[in-house]
Length: 402
Image (cartoon, rainbow, N blue to C red; front, side, top):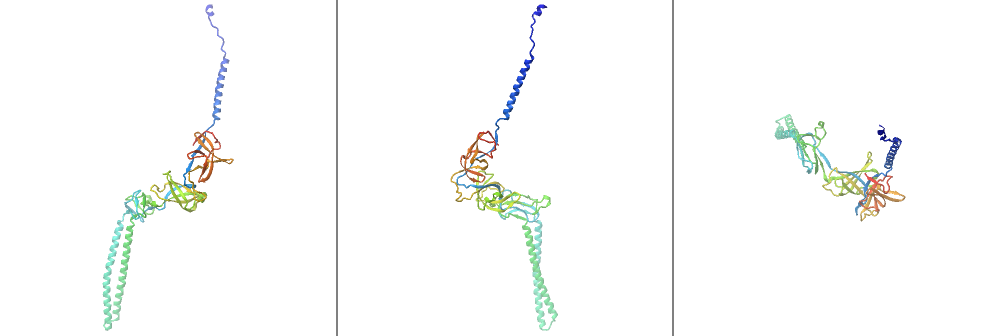
């Protein structure tokens, strides 16, 4: 036993305080790293979100604009064709997009009752006319009898009462024949009235143009006024005279002093953004909309084109009228929105976008072109600049484009 105990290895007691110190050091390192990361995250340089717009150019030989506006293409002559009376449609001869000419038959209504009525009116007219010859024969006979009685009176073979009776017969028949002739005139007017009612059953185009819609089908009722709880149509077709197309725009009353009759205008349809259409102001409607604080301006196209359609959206640019004080330039002019230009201590500059950062670029400006400024030096067409730059924006700052 003593030999076995001599082989026992005596271990020193564990130092538990040293292990705790290591754990605290590791914990502190972790917390310090997390705190440093949080401080870096909170104090890092954040990109500034900006809105960017491209610098444009006004083509050589064109005039500067004084105002931009938007509106719609409208037709001066536009009509929803309907009937003058209520009736049932039996025939429709128009389709959407079809060209029609003035007087062309668009639809027919049921006129069977009116046809029967005009047949009766014609028969009455004929019967009245046939009564006239009979009365004329009797009138001629009465006049002969009156002459006979007058000769007999000279010979003393008759009495004055017989003369008076023969004269009364002549007068009566004369009055009767005048009455019958008036009845013939009334019957003729009745026939004409019935014929007019029949003609009203035929609906014709009031002018030449293009049909935009087909609003009724055979078998439906049509009326010039709304009736029947919505089951009665109020029109056959809507027709537009394509030769009367023009533009209507609402101009803010604060800028209406920049617009005048005859002023040149450039129009761009939303459907054809690369097509500039020459136009001019027809008239400024002399009244303002108190709800919108705008004034209506009518603009006419210099030349019409089949691509121009009613109700198309259009953007118009009112041009400065060329004069000696504002000559038309012979070369392209660089234009930048007014909201992108900043002025500080007499220096004019913009923030030019350079990939993910911005550069503060000094520029020289000229006149105005609507809501844009002419730039004579510092920029070229196609450059991108920050519009309405925020206060924290500075040169070299990282940006994010909206």
